Length: 134
Picture (spheres, rainbow, N blue to C red):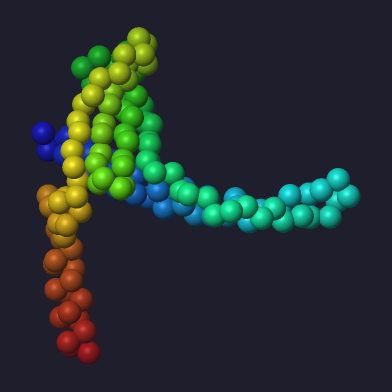
């Protein structure tokens, strides 16, 4: 159970990083110059694009109980509703199974959960102590 929670936590963190990266790339693509036939760069002005509403991540691994079996994990995060859904897809058969679904709104309010030392609160205390000494 702890492994599953840790896995989902790492997955949520990687999705956050992926979302930041997609947002950055999305903004860079909108301002890229496009060469015309005459070789003079032309800037294409587009109306502001709406970023994707859902973040989706695909990762694959071997089933620990059966190393021959390949599994794809599909994670969908809806930032608007603060929900995460995780599916397993058997790559041999294409069968998709819902593994987990939850509202993460309250999870995002936690400063720390299942954290190892140094925890965020310990680091914060150390920083305050260091600032007070100087």
